[in-house]
Image (cartoon, rainbow over all chains, first blue to last red):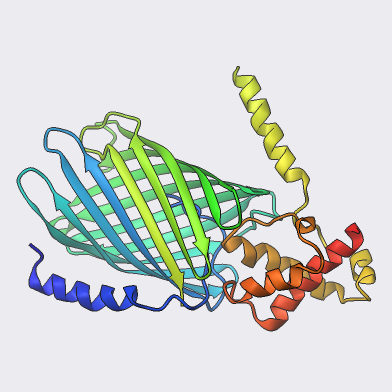
Length: 255
Length: 102
């Protein structure tokens, strides 16, 4: 069951945004869902993105999690954009229990250094700060992209630090590299692949040698002031507590 | 086998890259477009490679006719948050490139 106060908060925040008319400018359309691209939004543009990520773990407990993110993306200058993840929440279900939870809110900043078309390589820097109930997370990324005509090659190197539980005593680090390719069949439709390689460091130690690899296809469609991108990933490693399948959909529209 | 695959991938990438999707502005372009200001054309190029790739990759500029380009850019200018002067600069740059390709 959803707690009453959370239900009220969700209704107040999500419903008006979902009903917002899609009649205005789009800041940018995504080709990938697990990777960020180097170009930043046009100055003055505002966009709402809704993320839905379904993850299934098929070990003996067999659990499902559906995570939601609601983000407003603002183009500040020609090379700088800021985003607010004003609500991250999720529904989780396993053999013994189920329920909704608020996971946090965040600020994300992206600065574009070079262009993926006219420069040898496009670079951007990314920083995210996320705060939740007994949760603090910092995430830094280097985004590297090159456009070869209709083909986009994208690479993200991410370092993530998390603190959880009471007094934020439990800590974890993660290093992730992600590679994506997307080919535009037409200006509206693109298809491609995404590949994630994670190194997880519980308590900032590497004793457990946790390595996860995910790979799968993506498809993106854009039209007028909205876009939708979907990626389905399967785990290529055999880490028991990690999701075996992930499907992420991002739907965005401009104001 | 690995070398063959790598060779095919590199050939595909070079093939895609061989078309210059946004050639630098030259004095010939300005001269060919009734003396358009070079800085104005440079601004058009800068906007083209920044704003248009937020949603899609750049098509080869010869892909559409000179008559079609103003309508194409105009139809997407709102989505790309382009002011009228910025839209006109992009169109001027595209037409300048096309004029020396003709």
